[in-house]
Image (cartoon, rainbow, N blue to C red; front, side, top):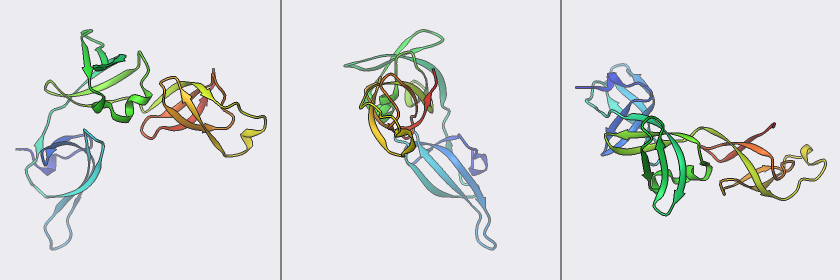
Length: 187
């Protein structure tokens, strides 16, 4: 039976009826008290991070998660359609599974889909994406010296705040975890 001594970063466990991945852990032995394991757990469904303590040697329920690479094809009324890069089978995923990540998906983008058996447990999109700015107010000469930002609509339909010197047609790098502008990509 697996115990807390089997903890390692990235391990997926079932805790309180939900799937969690171990983000960080530390074995603590406080003198004459009982040893315990302090952990940071990240929920696979909603991304919520919590801290929790387990008794040292406590039994845990490890879940085997399979990761497969898929390609995003298109979005329609039934959901988001992905294609398995190996078998070319198509998989439709509900909008609730993607949440905010859908704002940064463009066609032909590669994603990792996590499976628990045949159930989809999560979708991981690349940490950064390069997207084209399709609509923003024009930049004014000299705006690069100030630290102001303006809203810009990118090719996927999402709106992000970009520096004042960004113009329509520019390609920008976006952090998909936060939705923040990182840099302008030189073409």
